[in-house]
Image (cartoon, rainbow, N blue to C red; front, side):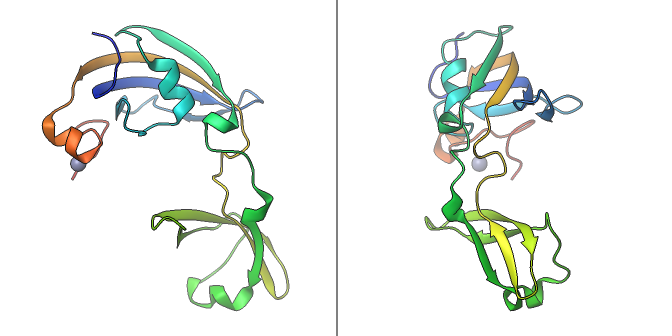
Length: 161
Ligand code: ZN
């Protein structure tokens, strides 16, 4: 069986940045399960896995355009400090969820604290990064009707409802 649209794929992976630092890995956890062709994973990785088979190893470096996007200065802004009144202690690196433009949630990260303002960054933490993946394909199976309907995988490594 090969990886094509609507297959459930289980992978072990290690993700490194340009400096060779490991920033994410499935090591010590269940393999990651995703539904191929459903935008569960970043486009560049999905493209690299297309057509591969169980047991294959794939190494790919994904540029920001096919990863979490380029870094957008426009998403960095200073907001009045009193907006954080109810949020408790605010520190550099604190993360908050905010309503995004398309109705979903975005994560904003505090990058600077001034006297009256707090600078927040709504870029994805990995925006602007080249992402190097080492992937091992552990399993490929057909998706269930329910998984196709939900657009994600159920069970180990996937969604637990
Ligand atoms: Zn579901």
